[in-house]
Image 1 (cartoon, rainbow, N blue to C red):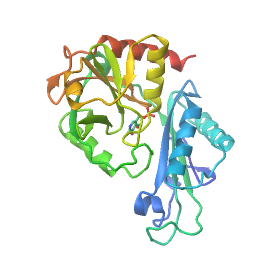
Image 2: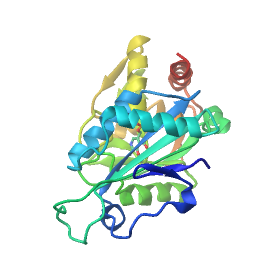
Image 3: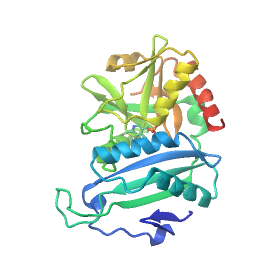
Amino acid sequence: MSDIYLNGRFMPLEQARVPVMDRGFIFGDGVYEVIPVYDRIPLALERHLDRLANSLEGVRIPNPLTRTAWKMLIQQLIAREPEATQSIYLHVTRGVAPRDHAFPKETTPTVFAMAKPMAPPPAEWLRQGVKAITHNDFRWLKCHLKTTALLANVLLRQMAVEAGAVECLLIREGYLTEGAASNVLVVVDGVLLAPPRNHLLLPGITYDLVLEIAARHHIPFEERPVTESELRRASEIMMTSSTREIVPITLLDDQPVGNGLPGPLSKKLLSLYQELKHP
Ligand SMILES: Cc1ncc(COP(=O)(O)O)c(C=O)c1O
């Protein structure tokens, strides 16, 4: 693995150390970002840096780097990673301080960043689709912030894995929110439906890109609340994320979605999405 970045220095991962009193370790007091890189070019970089700035502001951690400095750091990470297709992980915590819930008076944020090779989703997933389960969304009410405190998401994803599924789709008060680590779009009566961007879900960059593709290609879509019953009668369901792109879900709670195979819209969107990688 190429060297990681920690607080201003590049170093081998094995040498990277964070004090146990880091509030990231103690409270999960931090935010992160994941940026896909194709042919050494980050996809939708400005949007990812906007979302990082927004997450930092949302938890009141001062942004430790300027936009130019973030971009320089990302370029350095990309150049050091041998594989051209990679993902960049950025992570900022409030820093090291004696344990107290309230913010410390003076502390320097901890900045950790790394690049790693990014494999495309398995071909089988795209050919056959994947299995997902549903669960009550028991996360907090600031899901629009990309915080490192992911225990609820971890438990929900683990439930999916233990059920032999790839993702857990979350339902809050009768409405679809998103997946444990993805956004979820559905096709009902030929219309692509996207749960609206609000505090109940992460504003996914892939979700944005997919809706923009739909608009450009005159694919009918609506950003509006999706009921659980619409989810269950959808002819297509897809999950979107920066590292897995668009993955069709063809089995939901052991029931086939549509005819049980990836549908035409999922395939079309996935193929159009590939064009974004090589503009
Ligand atoms: C909870 C959650 N929702 C949605 C997404 C998708 O966001 P993006 O498309 O920006 O990767 C992620 C990404 O990991 C996520 O963790």
